[in-house]
Picture (cartoon, rainbow, N blue to C red):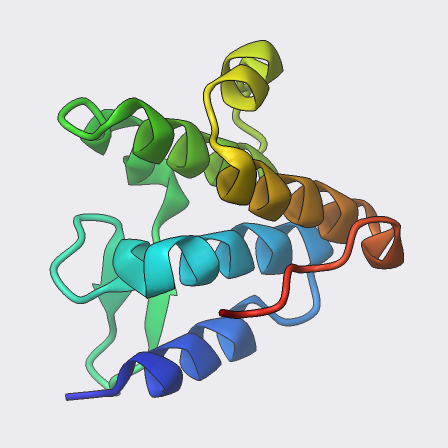
Length: 123
């Protein structure tokens, strides 16, 4: 069993080197204290050696029962990581302030312009 911080570190290591994948992964890690990367989520994968990763390809088929904000964040992360189209007017208009702050930071990081909109400080 891993702690939330260990899981986040492992996911960051997995995503390292590809800014869009880093951005998508960080968005999921930071959303509601890592709720989207918790064990048991249908997009979380664990290899035999214990390595963990996010299977972004399955996300679109698994968001139907989630709230609107959760769905928007997951689909935005999937767009960043896997190039799936997302309706930005839906994402931007449907997030609360903290969600939008994370989304903007993810977009900036994914573009390589992280200082344009830095990741928000953790509470």
